[in-house]
Image (cartoon, rainbow, N blue to C red; front, side, top):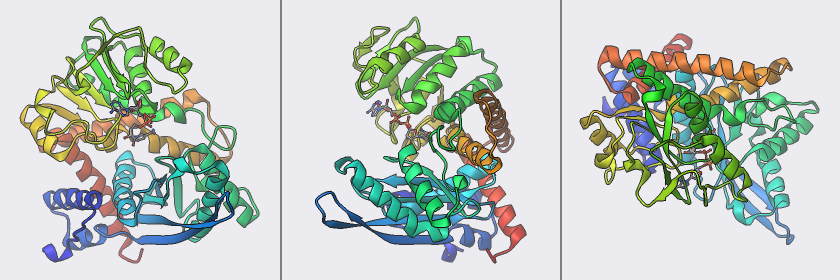
Length: 422
Ligand code: NAD
């Protein structure tokens, strides 16, 4: 039985494999399917020679891993960071397979990146590196093959360089190969707020199934960047009382509730978009994880809730906006304390669903209004929340395990249907 199991020294890949094997065993998934889905279809390494501004050539290493294309084209970001390696890409690609499957969108999972330090590079150096990378992974990416997106240290600018390079290679415009593009160049209205909208929708749906009114919930949100700020906005517009927000500058608390529009106005004026000096709440010096609230949204860092602070958490419910904000050790403590956790790859899937909307619009060449985008996003997020909630209630298991099992089941079913000639 364990002959089909892989082991990995890379911590992220080890965790991804263990999570998969654990859920697969609980589902009693066929051993042959466990063997197939425990491996990636493709792990590509490319060299990326780049002319630096001083005229020297630096050769970076780049990667693209396609874990699965059973359901559709692989989908996942491209990261620029010194720690990027092929195992990290594989772990993240595998998570993308489950995230896209659970989201019910027609994609498999992929991930890529370049091992580099973009913060020390000029724009011109980054452009030359990005264009060479795009050309080198070109044989395996495509609108119907593998559709990359932004990730850590990449954004709209990199997507434009990638798309422009591939479009020139193909001598035609290729908008459907990359998502996360600027609105002015084949991007989609609504994408900026999509992840936070989805996270907040999960929070509101959770309150609904628990029979609570949003106005009765005191909410704390860690991180006031892209995900945290829009989560806060949507929750406050729904009537919830936001008692604590935080960013890298500290924790801001008000028992009366914080005016989130004012917090937005504040960060707009701040050169680095931070809460430093925000007058709409008291700056406090404790960990926001321990804030007095009912519903906590960790939307900043991985490992924010860990074995050191999990026992001190006052919230009864957590909705994970960030990726992996609760460690496996903390998860066990929360479970023992009866805390309900809505897992990351359900809660923050608004981002990848938004990418799917961009791709769909690019394929048809017809663009939706922001309102249409948000309505469709809400509809999908609510359906996915219900699917996982009902599955977890029916099987009496945690939402995280239920989400994994539902996600793996869809990929396993299609893999079985199509056979192994993939
Ligand atoms: P961001 O860079 O826009 O914001 C991060 C926020 O966290 C900032 O407000 C920053 O000040 C704050 N922060 C950093 N260190 C902190 C600390 N020690 N304590 C408190 N706050 C701290 O990033 P983002 O796009 O909002 O992403 C946040 C998380 O959500 C990441 O884990 C990311 O991988 C995940 N995520 C993002 C998206 C997306 O579409 N942006 C989609 C899925 C998952």
